[in-house]
Amino acid sequence: MSQRELEHAKIYKKEYEWRNGPKLASLRVGEDLEITVAAPSLPSSRNSPTLTSDSLIRAMYCEADAVVAGTVKSKASQLTEDGTFTFTTYQMTVTQVLKNNAIAPIVSGNNIEVTRPGGAILMNGRVITVRDESYPSLDPHGRYLLFLRFIASTGSYKEFRRGSDFQLTADTFSPLRGASMTEDLQRGGQTESLVNLISAMVVTRCNN
Image 1 (cartoon, rainbow, N blue to C red):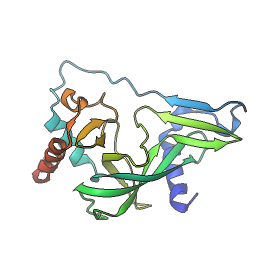
Image 2 (cartoon, one colour):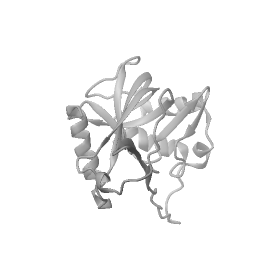
Image 3 (spheres, rainbow, N blue to C red):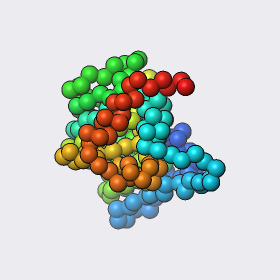
Image 4 (cartoon, rainbow, N blue to C red):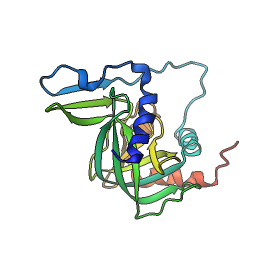
C-alpha cells in the first residue's frame, strides 16, 4: 500500500472496531466469501420536524467539505490496518464542483482520490468481498454526485455520511441508498433539478 493508503487503513480500522470481527486471513479456506454489514435501523419520532429536500440538502451541503460530480476512473481495495475489514480507493475525474474545499480547492477536470468502506480482495486464492450497505460501492466509469469529507493528512476524500450519494445516468439521478432521504429524492429525477437545488445553497449561511 502507498503511504496514503496506510493512513486510510488506520482510519477504517478505527471506524469499524465496534464489529470485533476476525481477521479476514484467518477465515477458513474454501469458496469465495461475502461479508455484509447491514445498514442500521434508525428510530423515528413523531415530534421530529418534517424533513424537506431543501432542509436535507442544506444540512448536507453545510456539513460537507466538498460536493462534486464526476466519473470514476479506477478503484483498488485494501485491508484495514487490523485486517478485519476492507476499504476501496477510487480515482475520480471531477466534471463539476458544486461546493469547493477552501483548504485544498478542487479544479474541474482534475482527478481526486475518494475512499469508501468495503471492497473485494484476493486472499489465499479466493475473493473475499466486504460490503457495508450504508455505503454502496462505486462502479468504474460510473458517474456520481458525492458529498465528501476531506482527509487533511492525505489530501484525499472519504464518504460523507450514509444516504448522501447519487448516481447519475444520462440526464437523471438516483440515490445510491435512499432510506435516509426524503421521498422525492428517493424517487430520483432530473439531474439538472438536483444540481440547481445544491447550487442554490451557495448563498446559504451555514452557521445559522
